[in-house]
Length: 313
Image (cartoon, rainbow, N blue to C red; front, side, top):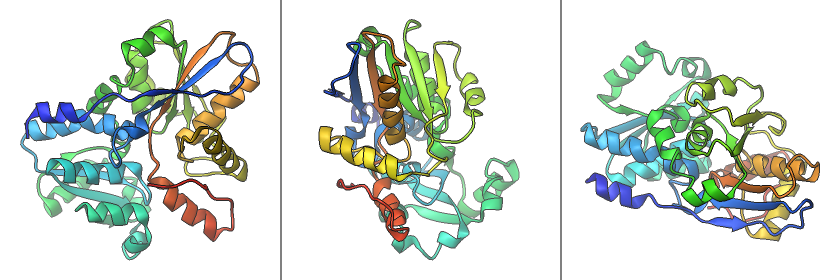
């Protein structure tokens, strides 16, 4: 596989205006990164670009990575492996999942793409970056190209630096995105104009991601907002689900409830509270993750909770 073929596979997304009646002459757009590919979607699309090129250039035939039960990253790596001719291995958090693959839409799809799983309990999983654990994995599976959980490394950040176009940098005053591991936000910061304001909406409790992001950026035109995590990673509320259903009804734009949905909720809430200056032009980044909707709905149904009404891929 030639690098030129890989490069051609990755293309630009479109900006879609949100035609809500905001005060203070505020304009709101969303960059539809979710449309880049049906499986290797959104920021996973960007994060894997240069990792795939590097793996191919270095002569690797296998990709190994880590993730949980409904991980966007796990499915994206499995899809990329099928697309570009790699064997793939997913080290999965939760050994109880080993006999439940058929009931898990993310893992069953990844398996369909040819991914081999290695299930570990949560205690072992916490040591996934330990050299002894990685050596053990090489003893079991042979040599592999390692992609970290969530995909964030220097190659991933390089890919995420390509999300913003020159037009985006010249036109928009504010750029917002969801933050999980910090890679996408770091790439956006690095490629932004110093005059732009960037806000990352954390999907996790706590502000520790700020320290992670500072390891990858040198600009100070950003802040991490930790007010809209809705209880933490993977947590949702009836309020959030109702908002996402209404947003889809009004715009025909599906949002995932773990990342982008929380960010969009936060941005619109801040607009309504007068946070953004008059004449602000805001670009929200849709980081994909729609594959997780089916798993989320299954979990919500078991609890007799509100579910997302729109179609899941």
